[in-house]
Length: 448
Image (cartoon, rainbow, N blue to C red; front, side, top):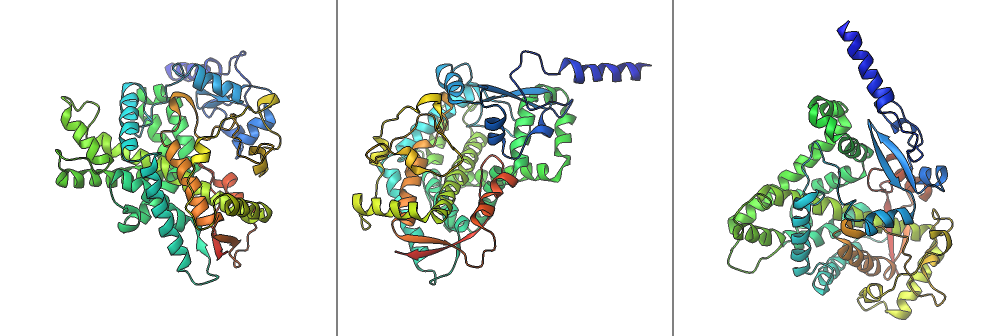
């Protein structure tokens, strides 16, 4: 009798108590235990735009808890900027201890320290731009040394180059090309950012933290699927590499001299504190991991998308080259001073532009063909939780695209490739995780 009573109470809790409330924002659907997962399409952004075009908020149920989608710019700006302090919290990661993605005092202290330290080493400044230009030069040499007509993997080319920028700021060395273990680490970055399992698992665990905290076996049930176990395994392997780098620096760092990199600065900061409650070796390794996962695959994949769109739109590629030739020249290094000085413009009626799924660079140009950013496009977020690495990422994208792509080469898909560009792009819909990445492919770089 007791078992039956318990089962009835559980069903009541799952089907009635935790069912959507009448006043909730619209949702694609809900089922007990699994929430909205059965109703979520591969391209969630398109689903929100097409299914709820007039709703500023949409509810998705991850397990027993609602997650609210800010479905237009006005809602996003209201929450993240105007009421940023109220929305500053983030879900707790049950199986992964966070640092830069944390909340409360830990997040505030680490964000403040990381911003100051990385700026001291050239983050978003001329010193950082010089590092990027050197890496762009190395990348061009690698392309130029390839036999004419040989196709190259954009992942193998761009990921190490982008990683080396962060490596020099964090480790003080070009670890991405000098450490033989690093190619495996790059594969880990991509697995952690591009796997759908990683994205949904983090949201599911975070949204239902209070249940997983009370019933730890529920969190372990999430790991029954090999794909999810793999995500945790990769994260731990990456953390171990970061711990080794910290230990190496502790062995040869001079605490009385100017810090060589982020790790040295952190170790010196630890030494000057009375307590290691917040700043300690483990948190330092976690911070390094977070910096690499957040800053490597994002930038390199944006560059990969840029090359694909240039191949798909050769007329745009020629316009880009002509603009560089006229305004910068093909023999001079570019800087992104013009981009830094650009003013944001409003997005017009409705807060959006038409056909957002189409590649139309002209929508970001004013009547005189000058760059005119749109305030509704917020790839780095905004407010207190804006991306810590925005200034570096913008600089990397501008310099790498100019130096290694548009100014020097014409691009072509590998002649042996049987898939169309559309099929390569569709990988983002079929397998995408937190980062939308095209399928692996090779490109032929032909000097102009």
